[in-house]
Length: 313
Image (cartoon, rainbow, N blue to C red):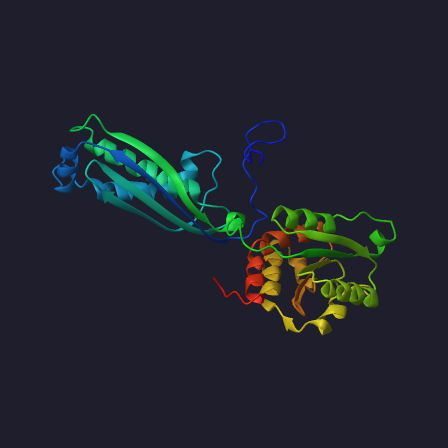
C-alpha cells in the first residue's frame, strides 16, 4: 500500500475524504505507565501533591481526543460522538484503555491513541515529584471498526458488471464506469467474472441478466440507463424481474448522491433480488459509480450471509 499522506511528488498532503459517507466508526487503544509500588499506593489514597490523578488523567485524555486535529497536522477535525478512558491500577503499573466513537467519514484511531498518550503523560506529570523511574510504554491500537477496514474477512460474492451505453457499445465512447466498478469490487476481494458492454436495449438487458443468474453470479451491478431519456430502459427492464426490492440500498444511494449533487434526484436507482442474485442498477457517470462504491462496500457483503441462511451476525 502507498502512504496516504504523500502526493505523487512525495510532498505531504491531507487525504480528501469529501467523497466518503459518514458511518459509525470506533477505535480502541491501550497503553501503560510503569511506576514504583509506593507511588501506586499514594495514588490510590489520593495522597499525591497534585490531587486526584486518575480523574485528571481521564479528563485530559478525553480533551486530547477531541483536539487531536490540532496536535497532529494532517488529521481531520472530527465531531466525536463518545470518548472514554478506563484505568486498571495494578501492582507496578497502570493500564490505560481509551475508546472513541464518531459518525464521520474517517476513522478515530488517532483520537484513541492520542487519548491514551495524553492520559499517560498526565499521570507522569502528576506523579513525577515522588517517582523518577516512571516509564510509558506499549501504546497500541487494539481495534478499529467502521469504514472499509471493517469486516474485511467476510464472504465476497461472485460478481459481474453490465455497462449499458449506446456510445460505448458502438465504439464511439470509452467505458470508465464499468472499469471503476471492477477495480472497486476487486480491491474489496470480490471475484469479478465479467464486465460486459451492451447497448441500451430492453431485450438484451434481460437476456444478459438471465444468463448470469443462471450461471450463479451472486452480485450483478449495472451502470447506465437509469435516467429519463428515451433510451434509458435499464430500470424498466429489470423491475418486473425483482422478486424482492432492496429499498434500503436504494435509499442509501439516493441519500448519498443527493447530499452531493441535487440532480441526483433525477436518477432512477434500483436494487432487488432476481432469484438468489442481487442486482443493483447505478447511473452511468464515473462520479456516481465512485460514490456508490463508497456506500456499498463493504456493507452489502453482509447480505450474502443472510441469503445463505447464516443469520445476521
